Length: 462
Image 1 (tube, helix red, strand yellow):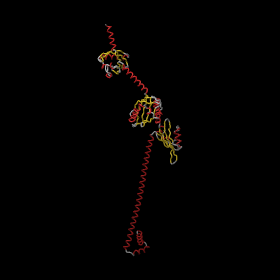
Image 2 (cartoon, helix red, strand yellow):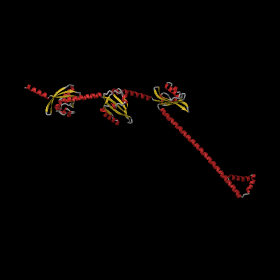
Image 3 (cartoon, rainbow, N blue to C red):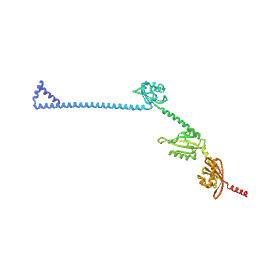
């Protein structure tokens, strides 16, 4: 339709201006004027519409191309901004890592396949007397020509062999890791990290020396020391060699066979195991005296003391204890008990009054001898002075003998009488120094002797 209109329009115009179209003009004249006008108007309208559509299409196309170009420009700008941001972040990250590495006691280095430094950072270089800027471009073999270990380990790494070694350089100790570098499947050099562990090595040496001194001390004391796991007291970590001298078992036999509960004396077993359970449950210090059977069947008295060792957070780590052989002490105690029993029996058979009195005249001890010879019951005498018990004149006289004996460090004798149960009883007192502060006062009843002496004295007077 649009094409027919355009043809009709151009035909009319051609007929007007060009002679070859005269025939066509004659053909047009055969139509009514309104028909011709309609053809021309329609053709013009269609031409305008077509031109407007073409112009709109062209503008839309140009606008689309402009939007695309603006979008592409915006994307390129964003990419550029993002690239700048990433580059800046990389620079900052590199600066941070460089600051960290520079401040650490490490030496971070890289060499190319020929051993030439391509990277050198860290305080570890300063400890070696090297400056990062000056070693760059030099070979590692030049910089460490006096360190045979470094040269040898670098050659191995350049041959593709990774390694981690402890190296000593100029009195310092470094733990160095050598790692071959590969880029695109091709060998590109070696990356090394050397950490200054001098202080750690010295601390470990000091710890070993301290541990050896402690072990020597522990194994010299006359007692068995042990360490048991806190969560399993049946599992012992250490038992000192003195166990063999004490019970005849080697530390290995004692630990492997878990002999402690098996060698408990049956009379002590229940009490000791109950105390052990309380100790493990509450973590309170353990202190018990009990008997163990030695390998030869003999009975050994021991004193065991143990504590729970905790970490900084308060969590249990292990039980640490010591076992003393107290057999001789127990035997001495038994002998003393027997001696005390014998003395007590002897005292009870004696009529003498036996007292311990200090320099102030205070009764310290009263032997369990014949109570009928005491001025007051034993329990009323101990802790009181002569002046609180006896008449003042009698107390002063006896006290003077006590002071004199302590001053001269010699035995003094004195005769005195006391009214006991309504009758006068005469005593011969013997005062003997026991220490710098007290005396042994023995009072013997001489009432009958005094009466006999008086009877003998009267005939001679007559």
